[in-house]
Length: 270
Image 1 (cartoon, one colour):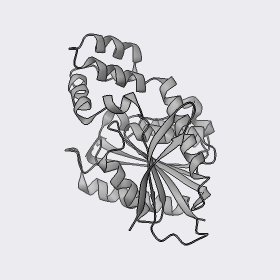
Image 2 (cartoon, rainbow, N blue to C red):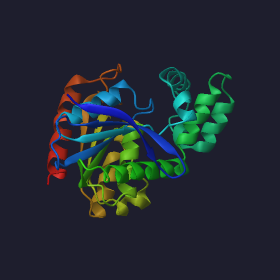
Image 3 (cartoon, one colour):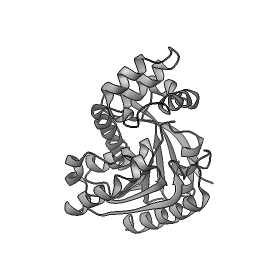
């Protein structure tokens, strides 16, 4: 059996709620590779904890941090996120990437939608992404203090919002060995030179707002001398890996799991 428990990790000025899973039967002196599993916009829900356990069953110490610890955790519930997504369905596609437009849009919506739309705005700014990157760096540094973790074999994998944050962590932590982006936005172009980790990106063809940007990102990574592999799955939508969502695409998800485990098996090898 796996050993898992809630923990608290101190970041810059706040405590993060996290979910730690350790392979069972760890003998004294054994040091495992470790993965930070970064949640979607829904927070570290049952699906994310299941993914963390799946990796732990393969021999990784995993931690799933709640980047929305505090007020955001209570605002970004599945029900509230569904309300926001309904509102976004009738909005311009670039709305969520423009804080000023998003603030104006939120003010125009019915009162019950405004707090959640404002929350989306708060987590979408460059300042917020920089802060989340520092939070994740604190999580990685915490893992390096654990006696059962090899401090030189730490990676990250994130989904949607978490995919973007996996990339952001790679720009913030030069010791990160490997990072996986599942259908997340690219990091800022000017931060690409800071990436030292090997990177893997997995995307859906029917998610053009993300997938259309990947060839350019790949070219920028190559020009900077960085390691980046990617695959775009035909017929797959955004969130194709999440088997609790209607966009789940089993064929793509199975292949993606094989690619990810093979990638970490190589990039986090001793």
